[in-house]
Amino acid sequence: MATKKIPLNTVTRDLCDLAAPTGNIYETVVILSKRANQIATAEKKELTKKLEDFKNERDTMEEVFENREQIEISKYYERQPKPTLVAISEFENGELSYRLAHQDEE
Image 1: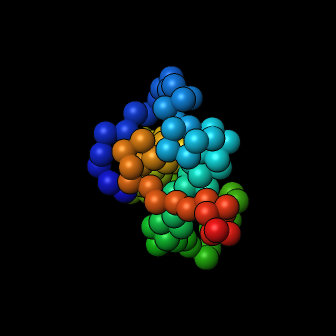
Image 2: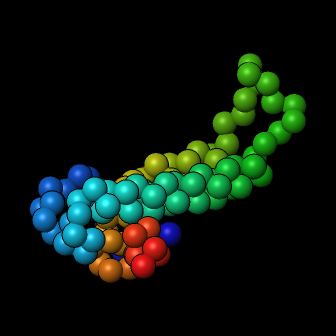
């Protein structure tokens, strides 16, 4: 993930500013939602791939080994900004490309 300045907490935003690029706050919310889902899915795949190295076929529910590297990887992903905040940041900075369905019909 890029190392750009994304707030880790919720930030109050002006709805008119968010709606300005699309002209409709609901269209903006759909765009942000879809992008946040893409980001979350990509992060989950990446985390699963990294944690796959630690999988042991002998592990059972009673016998799970704590691996410091595995814990550090998990903590790293926990500290990352939420996908919604990343999507909003990309949208506000003009880094997000999208097309609206009614534009395709014309």
